[in-house]
Length: 460
Ligand code: F0G
Image (cartoon, rainbow, N blue to C red; front, side, top):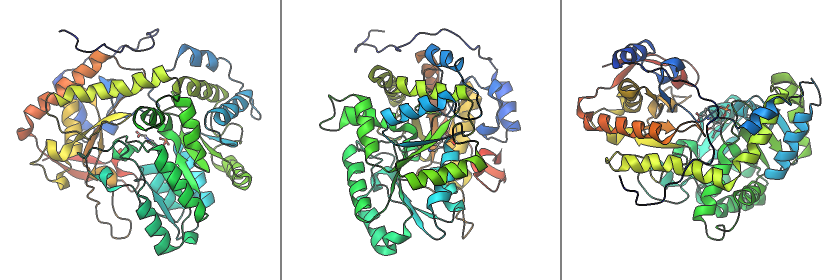
């Protein structure tokens, strides 16, 4: 094969390897049946290429591992906490830091601190844990993302943008006092890893400020978002990702963070704020739910690894490799005509299961089925992001039928090589060729919260 463009190679080399178990199709058919056709219930050992999530599945560098040995495991005032605090101030610009065990710990405390029962919480599309914590605090989530985000095919460089009109209409309808805050997720996971533009967050911040409403950034993948701004938004091509990130975060009052994504670690998160009173409230709460305010459920070494990961994640060469590796998987599948969410997102390629399995009605969970079939074909583990993830309306009990019925192929950072992803593309293409024979699923067990994690199915 002749190259038509200059290949980009990984900006690192491999120092330690983890052998993978090779299984037969028969083994995998048995395993997925035992797992109730839910990829969350598979044993990791039985998975060949694990694209379930990019969360906590990253490979740490030698610099981060070296930092693990410098863990100061004091109960109070660990030096790793102070280092993490100074890096959050340096790279994101927030004044105060409360570490948490992971993102949802931060969401829990922030929701409980800021939401009064009956208030509305607008956001650019929901994320599962974020919305659940808002609801548990008595709030009601309102989707204010632009319409394009709900369409898997329409092209838009910043498909994660907030629709200012929807936000303003909500303020008019409910009154600013009935809005707890607005969350801006960057990139937007459930929309396919789509970014938010600088212009948009700036305008959201201005509108929110005018009405005395706080802006909370879900900064989980904000570094990946910053790369898109550098590549796509006018006036930013000469700025570093680090500079863009700092400006982006400046248009918010607080952030929740799952360090398990952007920050290249296996565990960790935080909530960061500019307001002293809110910091006081969070510092009081963290000792109840997570741990002392200088460790928040993390070991000193975990905080050190996260602080060091932050320094590596904002490097332009690294982030370009990261986003381009994901895009190249998409480009490869495009040759086979596979229906996918476009443009390709930052952390994952999303297969459009409604189009992929046109003959399977949404009530038979085509995305859940496709994820199971992919595992059987090649041992690749993906995640359903459709009807099962959307859950039920908490008032009527009816199942939501989201427009997007997707399978997420999520790429861990610095973990898989190009050949791994070649195999993924090959396997998806095979399934697509034989799609007419595929059957849907029936749900036979449904847990009360976040049902996608533990629900069980049978093949129809
Ligand atoms: N916000 C976003 C945008 C996320 O993607 C996640 C987690 C969280 C918050 C919660 O963070 O897991 O550390 O508690 N997303 C994972 C995923 C689970 O697979 O997309 P957490």
